[in-house]
Image 1: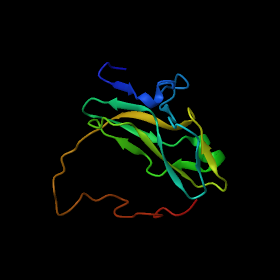
Image 2: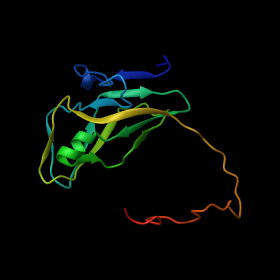
Image 3: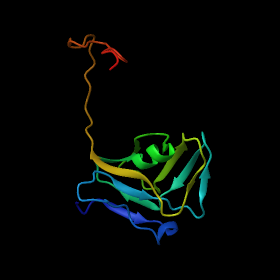
Length: 149
């Protein structure tokens, strides 16, 4: 990756790995929980989990924070705002809002992999206001317009 992508390890995470790719073809880097002590999330509750890292992205990029599929499948734990966006001008610690949709309490331990971060290029289109949009076969058909199955 280019050298204008910067990462800072916070004091609360000096012993934790930096975000990294688990395999050669992974799209997302795993983010680790920089909790001081275990955090238990009851069913239906949410918790803010620090990751111990802050980043600086060049203009035109964002970091998308996404759930880990294993946590969602095995425990019903996911992110409240998914995907979360880290803007290029944000310099604070990345924190993850976990929610427990499962039936049992879930405990986040220090160094647990709690989310994935994907770096993506963004576009900033300039919209031209109009009174009519070009027609398409779908038109304004929305939720469920193609049926079920």
